[in-house]
Length: 156
Image 1 (tube, one colour):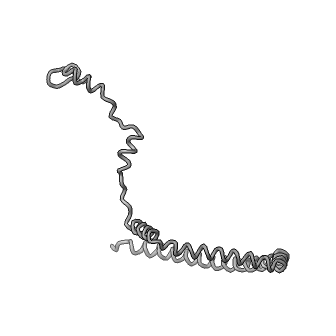
Image 2 (tube, rainbow, N blue to C red):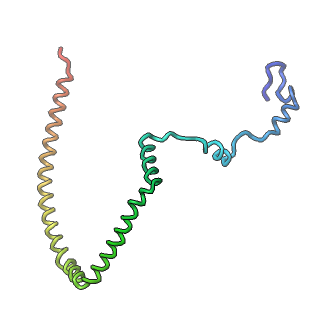
């Protein structure tokens, strides 16, 4: 044990009663749950100003009941549009069936072939344009580097 500076005694030899009381005390390391409940519950991290403003605006919007003014018409509009879609699908079921038959049989393959042809032409044009732009950018970078090198050299 560590010797006291005054009279060469250890703390237990110097005051045995106090040492006995100190050794019977529980450990001072906080338990995890106790530490989280008592200490970390009080820790507050500052919130950025813009986030506080957004939070306040959303809270004020929800508190005043204005949120129901938005959600109510949206819900009613959804019900109306679903009902209209079901009515249209039942009234025009045969026409809808013919449309999908045409779409899968002739419409999409034709559209795909046109799209593929247009994409091939566009890709060729873009590759030409990209090559031109890349070479122009390369020349511009070389000129800029040369200008930087000449401007950086100090006159003698």
